[in-house]
Image 1 (tube, one colour):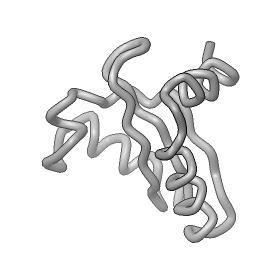
Image 2 (cartoon, rainbow, N blue to C red; image 1 turned 90 degrees about the vertical axis):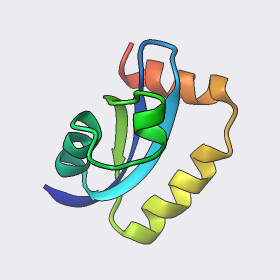
Image 3 (cartoon, helix red, strand yellow; image 1 turned 120 degrees about the horizontal axis):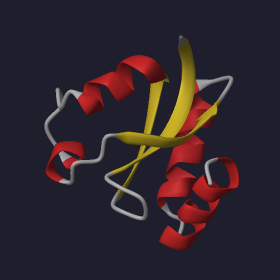
Image 4 (cartoon, rainbow, N blue to C red; image 1 turned 180 degrees about the horizontal axis):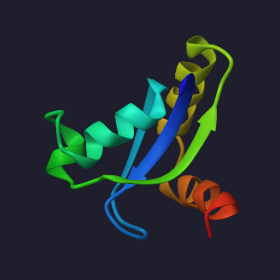
Length: 85
């Protein structure tokens, strides 16, 4: 499904977190799980989707991603626990 989304991946419960943005969530998570992109997600083994949020435009998704990247870790964990306890 193509729709702008932001998402959080983790390596394990309360492990390393990765915040990303994409227009195709299913494809992007598949890429992370199959380690097709070099970088942070391979280095830290983050491949489990724990949270996502759909947006109407890519611009709003990017703005929200930037905001969440600036959050404290505890805030990100609270966001995950809200919808994925």
